[in-house]
Image (cartoon, rainbow, N blue to C red; front, side, top):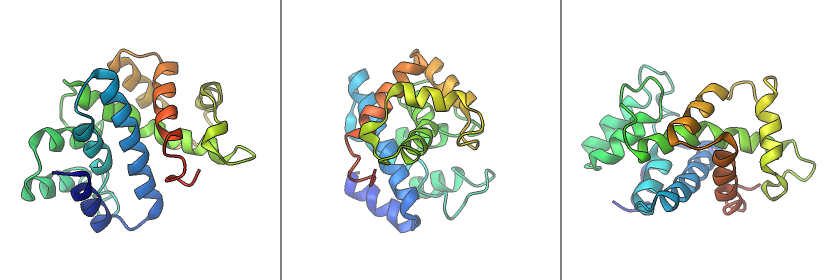
Amino acid sequence: MTRDDAMQLLTEFTKNPNLVKHALAVEAAMRAYARRFGKDEETWGLVGLLHDFDYEMYPDPADHPFKGAEILRERGWPEEIVEAVVAHADYGGIERDTDLKKSIYAVDELTGLIVATALVRPDKKLQSVKVSSVKKKFKSKGFAASVDRDLISRGAEELGDSLDELIEVVLEAMQGIAEELEL
């Protein structure tokens, strides 16, 4: 399976451009973590692209990401990718026993906080966002209130990273595709 296959599947199920951008942000973060761990960047990127591909059609936690997993299996995607997609959800019932599963869990929610941080900057640019800016917004519970800070903290802990390290890796990855993210 290729990135083109993943993009085709993503855009087949996801019409909201912001959800597509979220997938691109998570893909970039996953690729960065693959490099950090010396793992297969392509596979990790595919997980990032596909982790929420079913969300627009099946947003209920009873369905997402389980419907997506069914679709992936029906279409012949490798089980490693399917399990990692399910593992990104706290309630997925998949043990996060690999760096791949831990990474998708850790980076997913954080990408949303980083986007929100960029959007309140005067220039609305990712390039002007610093780790300290994200950390400050992380501590402000009223800012981007739907972002689960406990999940981000657990993700960093499971990876063995500090919160600062997690933010730095994800922010730099997203800054590398800022144009695609229109930020």
